[in-house]
Amino acid sequence: MHQSPMEMTFAYFILHALLLLQFSLRSNAREIIEKHVGNDYTHSGNLKEDHHGPHGLDPTLSVFFRVGDLYLGKKMPICFAAYDNSNPTHLLSQDEANSIPFSSSKLPYLLEFFSIPKNSPQAKAMEATLNQCEHKPAKGEVKFCANSLESMMDMTLGVLGKVKPKVLTTKIFSSNHTFFQNYTFVKKPLEIYASKKVACHAMAYPYKVYYCHGHKGHTDRLFKIDLHGENGERVDAIAVCHMDTSMWDSNHIAFRVLGVQPRSSPVCHFLPPDNLAWIPSA
Ligand SMILES: *[C@@H]1O[C@H](CO)[C@@H](O)[C@H](O)[C@H]1NC(C)=O
Ligand SMILES: *[C@@H]1O[C@H](CO)[C@@H](O)[C@H](O)[C@H]1NC(C)=O
Image (cartoon, rainbow, N blue to C red; front, top):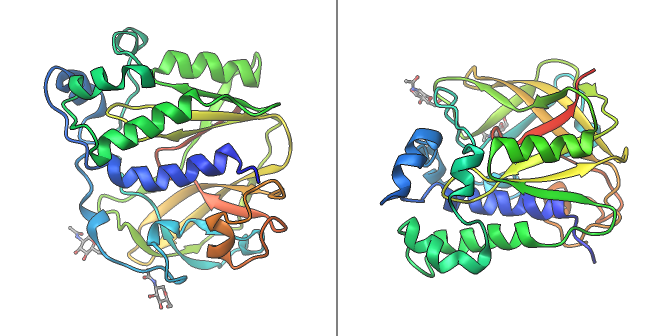
């Protein structure tokens, strides 16, 4: 009953994105955070809207779709986590990252440092992130957490090899992003072929931390999908299709959302705007 770390992380992302947005940062950490994270934590307005997805579940689960949905003209409701593209966020520099411990054994100190109350949802989210980062990779799997740009690049190149890396992200072209709405696939989805990939998911933490995992296999397929929202918003989305879900937990939420037989159907999902997919540039 092994749940793929990718999917576990994705579930964490969805869960923790909500907590993350509530982080309030004070004290000596503030300067670093404001400089590098800007108002990443303050654009949560839309998250408070109470919508229900077509499956009657949390709308944040409206990111999954089937391989058979990859056609021009497909229309579906999608939730892209709130995102402010006028205010890009950055990873800490290596020096800054090195000046702050990053270990679950230092959690009490870190909570004090960031002025986060013990046992608060934020504290629990931080602990979950640290635990996730300290979890040993499964056999044959490459995973790491990056809390600086340098460490992300070093470790990503360790997976991709001596190549020029290229990063793929979901881009939202709107000054007025609607958290949850219907989108139409306005072009035929374009498959992006890559022999190796590293996917990095933003984690709940007081500064930018990514959980990354690498694949050398060919069981995941990447797509670029151009979307138009009902409100006229344009999104250049990146999506991943996991073709082999036979090792996933049969209770994985994606199977329920899609109404498919667990572990016997591929599962696709859109990448949230702050996730990164690294591939070798052609
Ligand atoms: C933003 O979008 C919402 C929903 O589509 C709309 O009600 C609102 O008027 C828009 N605001 C602006 C400033 O365009
Ligand atoms: C999407 O469109 C369907 C059918 O037109 C509608 O019932 C549904 O409420 C829409 N969903 C959203 C999130 O706007």
